[in-house]
Amino acid sequence: MYRNENLDAARCKPEYTKAAMEDCRWIGLNWVGDVTHQSDRLNVYRKAFEQLKQAGHLFPCTCTRRDLEKAVTAPHAESGETIYPGTCREKTTIPETKYNWRFRVPDGEHITFLDENYGPQLFVAGRDFGDFPVWQKNGIPSYQLAVVVDDAAQEITEVVRGADLLVSTARQLLLYRALKLVSPAFYHCDLMLDAEGNRLAKRNRALSLRELRVNGKSPEELRKEWI
Image (cartoon, rainbow, N blue to C red; front, side):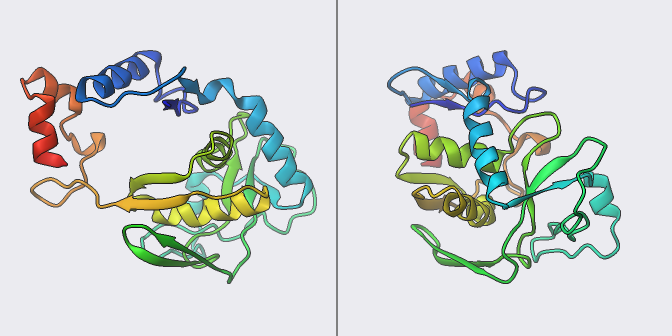
């Protein structure tokens, strides 16, 4: 199957989706059935959001990313990620301004899982990651909530992704538990790096698959070099 994770409308334009699908087919990655677009599943995500809210797992938060960056008391994980300092966590009134909804993590709980590549993993809620957004003030679910709901609905049994998302797995396991869903197995791959050791990413001006294709690389050459 092919899932188009297009909830960020500013970054996920139709032409990008079309190009990604063309590149996948060109390199030999094919799928069966219709493409699933997350933008068509907002009602499904809202049901999961309401379930979490009714169970008391969420709280409204008016903090912006800039607010958190400026917070002197905000702790940081070893990765350098700013951990939510709990500014709105214990407030008892609903804000009058627009707000996001955050998942209240069980501070101090050890979240463990066996990664099929890196072995046993342990993250401590409140130390390695804090309360995280699950629903945005614009009515769009977060990546964390959407992928958990979709993986369960599509009966995904193994998730393969980059090692930079190891901590996201800990967050998602809390959502699986709160929603009473069965979690898949996880395999986190080493990241592809350039000659300077930087991750291959658009913001680092890394070559895209499309650019390599236009410059004459064949699927066979790429598979030999990278796989």
